[in-house]
Length: 125
Image 1 (cartoon, rainbow, N blue to C red):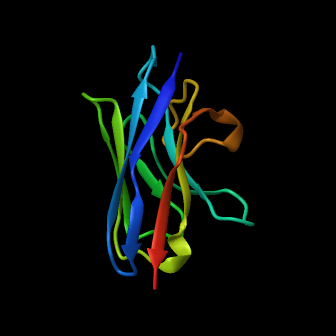
Image 2: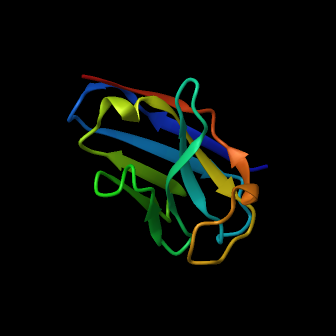
């Protein structure tokens, strides 16, 4: 059974940085996509970043240039580095994994079958 466990997060002042990790276990295949999502109170869930099994990255316009994601193949860990954080980045952050997916572009929402427990990121002004 696939499990995703996030770590990192916390509270930081605007302009600061945080690092989130997503440890994947239970996958029996290598070609899966990991996405990063966030949801603030009263707002819809937003996909902010993701990485294909070959390491191709994608970002939403709201975080492009500030967030980077990368995959550690050996450890089955995906990292989200968040720089120049803004108060509007405050949200619960989740990583999510797909069923087998080999395309080099982000998958539709329906492909994300496995979700982490979430970690809170709070940015104060």
